[in-house]
Length: 157
Image (cartoon, rainbow, N blue to C red; front, top):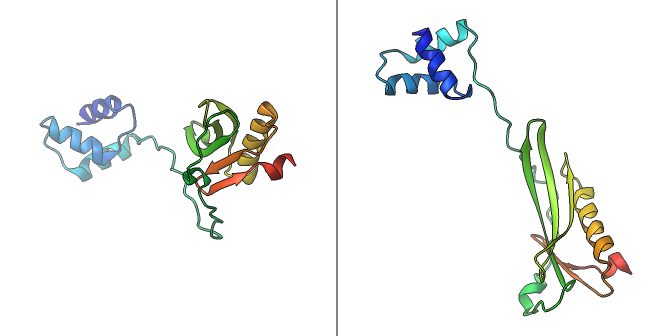
């Protein structure tokens, strides 16, 4: 039985715990009980490799949602007229990293980005400042995010 458990465990890449090893053994025709599989695995220190937990967010103050100025019929005909932003998270061996990006809506190029281990205000500000520094827009730019549309007038003026 121990050999069958080790084979099922190794075929999973070391990520299966006793419930999944038990299911694999049952599917292969092995007659066994779930508690017996768990006991044998525990006795021989065969443990599932734990994966990272997905980040979760606490609800805090309500967000200030602005109107979507891009839905007002604005056509983006030239670069640095409208930028869009987004934040995502990436799982690594050391934990989660958060990535904020700024994309020019006309050229579809990523013009600013920032990556940090925490979801802090500086993450977004660094990405926006990189975009402003790289493009140096001489006019007002609409910056759209999930929270609505803002203007870079305050950033450059």
